[in-house]
Length: 114
Length: 115
View: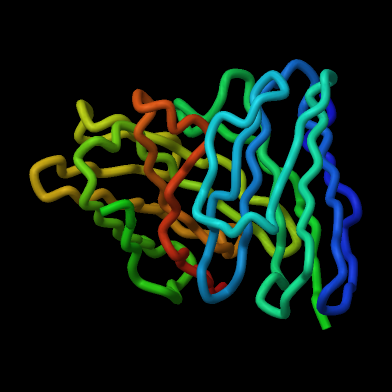
């Protein structure tokens, strides 16, 4: 069974640009969550989607957005990039959601903002 | 109140020794406490998890001890091996409040097991 796939794995952007990251969950999983990982702040929850609906949102500015498609694939977008947005963005999938903490993470998309 | 505090930040253990990582929380609504292991260049992977109605859970060399009254839980890695060298994250979730997918993570502990 294929795991969670995230693309692209690495990308470099400049301040003010926008970026779109993609996540393909494990087959059959309907929930997709996004996390930001940085050395200073650790792992922070961005949002969760279930059946194309945002079910939960973390404390990030509106520049961070996401969506989920009918095949459960998800994308997140960051607009007007800032230097502080440099991070590893992790996608996690689960069948129902994170109720049991059993999230399956991808390897992440490493974003560098110059 | 949503924080999970993890210590130590880094840990060096000799092969065969016991690695102990501690976490503390404030929110008594948390009802599920997973531990994740992350190797460089990889995403976190679920290692072991516990609910607060259980004081201890063991899976192979990995044991979670849970102290509900103290709001603390810890991961013990027995007979630590160089292959255990990784970053470990404790986490917590309130699974009944609709916070699905919203794990609250500790800051992480980088474990190095010396041969």
